[in-house]
Amino acid sequence: GAGVSQSPRYKVAKRGQDVALRCDPISGHVSLFWYQQALGQGPEFLTYFQNEAQLDKSGLPSDRFFAERPEGSVSTLKIQRTQQEDSAVYLCASSLLRRVQETQYFGPGTRLLVL
Amino acid sequence: GENVEQHPSTLSVQEGDSAVIKCTYSDSASNYFPWYKQELGKGPQLIIDIRSNVGEKKDQRIAVTLNKTAKHFSLHITETQPEDSAVYFCAASYIGNEKLTFGTGTRLTIIP
Image (tube, rainbow over all chains, first blue to last red):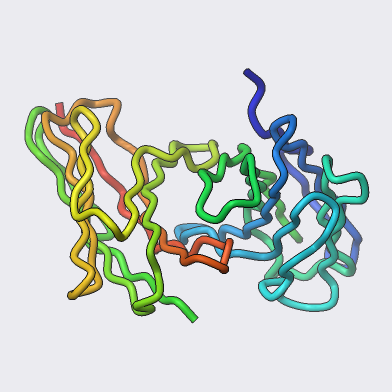
């Protein structure tokens, strides 16, 4: 079946530009996560949704980062006024239920390069 | 918050030999420990996980062991094959905290 999809796969932005990254979770999955993966590092948590509710945004590095999931399905991660340190792979993951410790299924990621 | 350390950062083994990757965690409340495999240009893929109510779990050539007292867990891959070459990440989480805290990864290379 279809997995988690993300678009675009690659994004080059000039410093100061705004970007929007899209995540399509597996159909019917309640939970959705965003992670940031710097080169050579493990993914780091950014934010978590259960349906349309953003339950945890403690990992967002600054107020330039904003995420939404208005209808409880597709999610968008927006980064305003991009900086070079925002360059990373942004991973989206979804899991079936709210029950804790369900398997998280990851998408292929969006590689963001800020020049 | 939780901190997960992973060793080694790189590992090369001959095809057919075994590979072992070790992780330690800091938060004694952690009770779920998944392992992910990440190939170049792809997202992490779950290969095995273990919960704190068991000490060992095995799935064909892959096994994970957990020592709650010492707060460490390990991934064991036996009879390694070229397709096992990838970056492996351990992670931890606990009830009430949905997010995963990942280790820094181990780049495993299988030498034919």
